[in-house]
Structure formats: C-alpha cells, structure tokens
Amino acid sequence: MRNDKNHLLNSIGIFILCLLVHSLEVFFIRTDETIFAECFINKVFGIAVLFVLLKVLHKTWRDIGFKREKILKDCLKGFGICALFYTLGFIVEFMILALQGNPGHMEFFVTGFSLTGNVVKQTGIGFVLMCIGFNVINVWVEEGLFRGFYITYLKERFSVKTALFIAALLFGIWHLVTPLRSVADGEMTIPVFAVMSIGYVVLSALMGIKWGLLYEHSGAVWIGLADHFFNNCVVTNLLHVVTDTGVDEMQIMRVLIGELTSFAAVMVFVRRKNAHKQDIEFERTEA
Image (cartoon, rainbow, N blue to C red; front, side):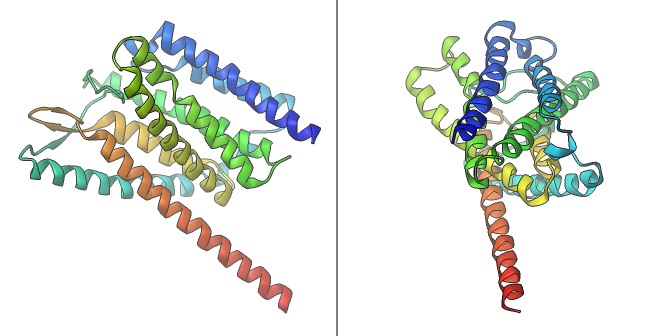
C-alpha cells in the first residue's frame, strides 16, 4: 500500500510541477499572444522533465511507447481516425449553417483554439511551419507524459483501468489553465467559466481515455499521438469554416461531434478486441 501511495504522490507531484510552469507561461509570459501564437515553453519543459524521469527510473523512450518500428503504420491509423470522425463533424456543421441561411466555406490559415472565439488570422508560410512545429512538440510531451509515462508508471502499482482514469483526470485538469486566464482577463464570467470548464475538463478527460486505450491496445503512443496532432494542428489551427458572420462559429460543436463519435468507436473496438481475446484464452484452457 505504501508503494501504491508513493506512485500516486509522485505522479501528482510531477503534474503540479509541470502545471505551475504551464500556468506561469499562460498567465504571465503569454507566449501565445506573441508572434509565436503558442504557449510552447511549458511543453519544452515537459519534454525535459520526461528525459530526467526516464533517466532516474532507468527507462527508455521505448519503454513508454515510442517504438520506432510502429511509427508509420500507427500514425496512419491515427490520422485516419481523426480525419474520418471530424469529416462527420464538418458535414454536420455545414448542414446546420446551410439550414440557418448562413452557408460557410472552408479556408486554410493559422489561428488558435479559444473558448471565447478565434480572433487572429495568419496566412504566411512561416506561421504554418511554426504551427506544425509547436503542435509536434505539444503532442510529443502530452502523449509522452499523460499516456506513455503516467499509464506505464501507475500500472506498476495499480490496475490498467485505475492508471487510465488517473492519467485522464490529470489531463483534464491540465486544460483548466486557459479558461482560468479568460476569467482573469474579464473575457469570461465565473458562471460561464464554471459551465464551460466542466465540459472542457470532461471532454479532455474523455480524449485522454481514448488515447490511453489506443496506447494500451497498440503498445505504442503513435496512434493517439497522430490523432492528437491532426486534431490540434489541422482541424483546430489550420482548417476553418468561414461564413459572412464570422469564423468557426460552431467549432465547439464540430469538436464535440468529432471527439465523442471517435471516443465511442474506440470504446466499441477495444471492448470487441478484449472480448475476442478472452474467447481465445477460454478456448485454449478448454483444449
């Protein structure tokens, strides 16, 4: 029991350290409000933390799911998952806009995801490359830490389900920083913050569970990492629905459709795989 408690406290301590750096950047440095348009310092810090943790625990990147031989095939699977279910989200979005008499069209430019709306539009190749680069760093540290490290580390003392739940919960809380700044800046009222934060944390936690299940199923981070990257970089930062009245006015709905349908599909797939595995094991014992 003591070892269980130590693993949990260590995990929380690492999370608090990374969260403090994340909060300092979002609230004070505000790198996302500079030419970089992205809070990347905390992500670089997170990668450095992973290097230290792996060194201290005598582990390698391969031990937390960064397996070279699975990169290409698994990344294609991840891109396919995101493209498939977000296509559904875009279709529904265009249909609703058309029914409202406000048809939209798709444009390619760089901007960031915001709970209060997208306000910055950049079209230069430099901004596109920075967007891609920063998103690579982002998904590398978030999948490496919240899936690869936490799930692997917590499974040493807890069940797979418990490890998945703890990692997903921490991932959900991680996403509270941005709406908190919106409240501090007066862009969001406390009641709106309360409602949106619950939804934001729950959605982030569900995404964490989905990527955690993909990590457990494949034994590598690449499927979840590719899905995560496509979601953040392509669907959120680069592809936008533009109407006469604004940009990405129904982005939240698009995200909900894309993520909830993909979450449900992954859950069904994993359960069927597990059931099939149990049937095979039962047949072997019977034989």
